[in-house]
Length: 250
Image (cartoon, rainbow, N blue to C red; front, top):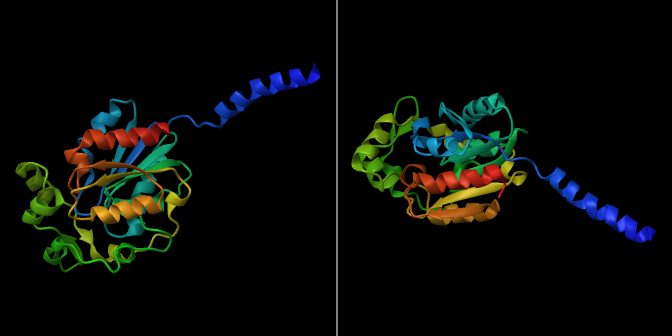
């Protein structure tokens, strides 16, 4: 009789313990844009996330160094009133790998993004790979900042967007300091956080094969979208859905 009573008590306690261990959904999303972009690159995703009750902030990266961009992301994280889903596009993947160590960050979402490991830079991630066709046409100013020509944006950065949208991206792009390519992530946050990855299968900027390799390496839950380098603009619903999954933990 006593044994049966003990099992009955344990049966009641186990579900309670399991529920107690399940964290509540994150309600805050911090979006980090990549190189040759600004916060407006998330313009189509933001209303979709807000419609789901999420509080969203798009960071404006200075694009001057990994340290500076991670600091900008950290400021947004610290202002959130609870757990955060941290999302990075392209170069922003390196930024969230660094800034994502903040204890308020619940999970990470990489969108057609680099995912460097501990002590790695973007140069390290791409070592041994053939340079992409667009690399030879980058414009570099006297201060060492890089920009993409408008026709390159249309052909290789956002080739699945209407021409007017591609021209807008080219006009509003944030110049990116060339030294960022050599900046190394100290400790990659994806080692200790749940990770999602949106893979752009028609990407000309970061080879889809490299994206797949990185997503596998970081053990991410992958959503593949037939998109250019800007799936958040050409396929915002799919990108928003991945972020919502990260917020709910599913």
